[in-house]
Image (tube, rainbow, N blue to C red; front, side, top):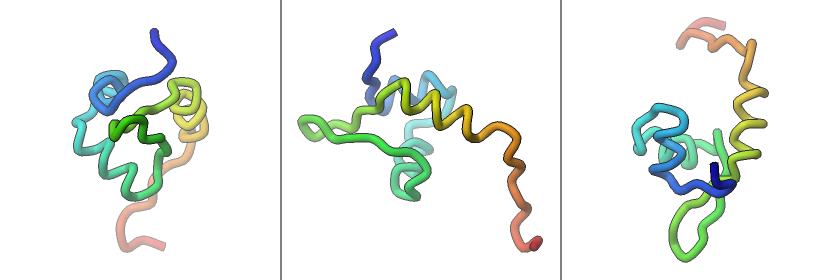
Length: 64
């Protein structure tokens, strides 16, 4: 697989909607770079981010 992915490639890779990728960018959950006005993502960075998310349960809203 290629190393750089666009939003559609990343959405397919993660089996998510493209809007989720844009939301995560806006929330600074993932990072990317704009090349020629198009978001690009390094697959190695995404894979590293995925590994860092293991074992981190989400807290329910309103529970402290």
